[in-house]
Length: 113
Image (cartoon, rainbow, N blue to C red; front, side, top):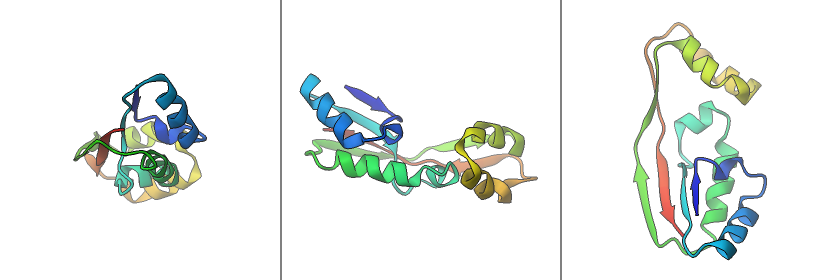
């Protein structure tokens, strides 16, 4: 079973993993790292932390950290990408106004449970 950048969106990630464990012998979680700057700008840092806390309740057989980034031509493109993330995200993006191009680090983790 694969959770690709979605476990942090689940209301109860621990319950989701429990259900997945009943369905499949292997679970792969690929999601933002808890330290992800991108997650902070997207105002998802608490959800990301909860997802990894849930994943770490099971033995992690393999784990890898990956460095990536989100790239935008200008502030308008960045703002459009995160428009649905709410007022906290919009406020956090303000320092990028007038900048181009924009690169935001997006480390993520890959784990086999």
